[in-house]
Image (cartoon, rainbow, N blue to C red):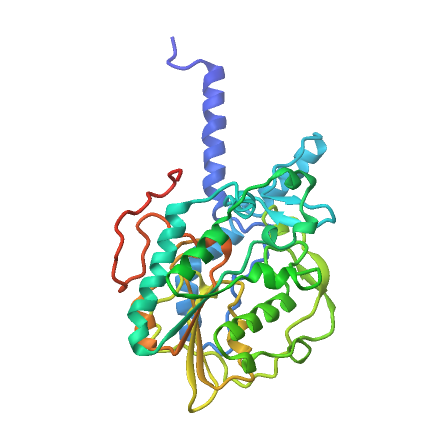
Length: 387
């Protein structure tokens, strides 16, 4: 009697072949991949800089372009469509076609159905401690949290949102706590709601360029520099169709053109550069810490933000008496929490700090805490634990 029947041997060969194919697939270029680096390599890079960049980011390149990682989600989507089975998507559609991000508990956070009190208090404590450490140096701190689209585009929310009625949100709790700490804040929800729609991109998690400028101006007023505001007409070009859609890309759907006023900034600042004081960077190649030189003298400004402000706000100080404006990501990981390096902040020695971490990421989790900042509160909430 053989150890395995003929049918079982066939099944074994089939399984072995399947696993072998999966292993080999990691060496086969994906036919639907772009074959490009996620962040384009600057033309100014020397061959050694290019080689170093590729070495550090080879993992991301393989992830994007091998192993059928672009093809399989599309095949899955098309198969479910043929079978008449609705696809599960990480976003949902509003009343007028506006797309909203549905993960990371964003809908519940904006509605007030989710209030992680301890995590918000930890954020407030962190900012308050920063201000206490920096105040003797003459540094001013302003907090302006870019809201979730659900917190602003309320007219476009689905009908089921009308049934949600909670008195307090995490955003409200943060503003109240920061006020008690004596920290200057800006409620960007109110700023943007007072402007005309659209305030956010229809198929993207981000606000549009006009909302970015209006929010920047509100921060300048709160910082005590109303003369530092910029005229939107001076920094925005006429509306043009632009391919956007990071929400669509989450399911490999093609981007859809939508009308957008592109930034048309006549830079006062020199091209972005690395600053020797800002030695720690976000893990993502697109979020390196950068500095923009404006003038030999003037105030030093540091923006702690994310993709809502990077690349735009540091270039908007056209009317400001500043010498240098720097931007760093407010976390070490792209979707991380409050773990930036405070030693860099102290070394850079800014006169003004603008903290602009997106609403869905601003609460502080677990043991995340800025390196070099004293810890006045040790009661951390473990990660992935309900409040």
